[in-house]
Length: 459
Image (cartoon, rainbow, N blue to C red; front, side, top):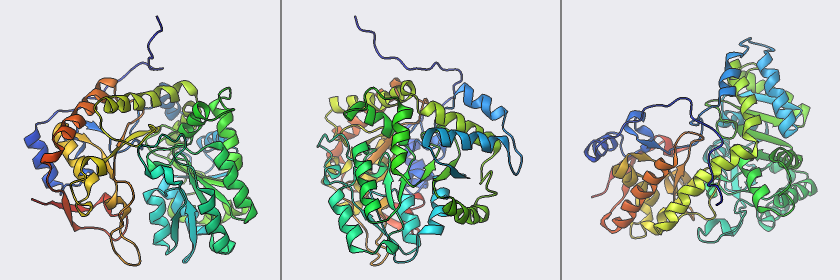
């Protein structure tokens, strides 16, 4: 008999999580103005809001933290991180930042100007926010297959080369500071980008003399899918695949709270020393000195160790198989979600489940609130609220997909928790016709509103 799959780790420490009643949850969410971000952690039983900084670090990472060098300048921890980035991604130059959006802020302060055009594959919310804040425009060049949750395309994160070349040929290169390739592509359902697509994008970029930037939050998960799904990579290690991936990038931003498995940290990787010099000025202004950049020595040491662990196949297989387990349970119940199953989350198709609710009442947010009412499970809306308003017309943008993202923290929950999530979502799915209305916005920020938006239930 074939042995069943088992996790490649054992549990050394646990944290108590609290259950609650439906009546309590209804009152808590009402007090939170129906914004799941506003809930206290003690009011959540299973927290799937994000996989960013919410995972469990390893014994080796905790050990590395104890050896952190907290010197203001030239700390050993900085050089440990520098060596790890060079060994794994190949960048000669880097700047540490406290997280991914900080990396974007520093890099974009150098490169993105008013009137610029920034093509890419379904830019993440902070990425688009930083672009639009600078009065530039993000142009989505993702392949059309990404917007059909039923199609089982292996690389739905791919950039459509025809769409991309249309942008590159329409605008002068001086107006296009970079092409952003998000690996994996979070906003389209945690979908990977193929190596062939990265190579083709770089070829086009070189033709038009435009640099390529990888948004690298989940680069290791992307490498895993290349190994599993792309011809010619089955016999390569994850680290070998990663090394090739970054030959097609001129620079990278990274929220290390994902694939480096840390609670805080990020960086910018660069091949151009002149760009590093320019970005260093902004790093000192916004983050800290160039050898710590908003990070403690302890966190830099944990990040360096996490980059090494996060690019091992056994770890990635364990991590992604848990996401697949949840997807398989939802498949059993007939619940629609973005296929194939992505690396870090299940993206539930709220538009299909709550088709009877007008898009103006925010279907994905409504589904997320109902899942919380059902079992104290917190997800996050990837839909019209996150899509924000058009910066020129101020009209709501309604994306092709209305998704409820259930992001699985790394090495944190068991498959029993996955079963609870699946059954709770089935219960909501079974009573979906009883959900008559969604929400209206009563207060919102002018940009990236989804973090702080206040909503009112429509009766």
